[in-house]
Image (cartoon, rainbow, N blue to C red; front, side, top):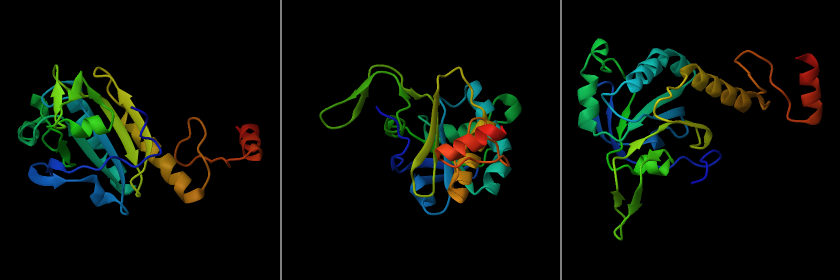
Length: 210
């Protein structure tokens, strides 16, 4: 599968647990089109080890995402019931109580497959159903989606490698800077730094001053 960067994010409807405990039967990212940027991330499995550290890290940064008008949404191949159960368990017991952003239940694996993050060997039968030869869970994928529903940034980590939430914020800042100013963001750019005009002259000017 090729990259989703530069393309529309796959559309879906699926159950999700929102606001820390409410079931939304037909959750969709489409509700944010025209309104918000979205950080949509996948994690392998509920009730595991690296995953709660990531989910709590995103929650700790919610104020930063919200100040930028960004919606954060998580997703795994667990059921909505499993999401809900994990949300009832305290952080000091390995749970994710206190997480308020939506957690999508990709129980039939089709969302993970559409975003290119589904691990495991699988195929589709004659009726279009996905048939697995082993357990299937999502890699640690992350997608930054603009208000028009287009993917601008994507990363996929293997299971042992936790993500850096600060880098996700930096990518949000870079995209919003480009949208607002029309200038591109050079290597190691951070919010508040100068951008660069996308021209030979702009490159020369930037390199001469940095």
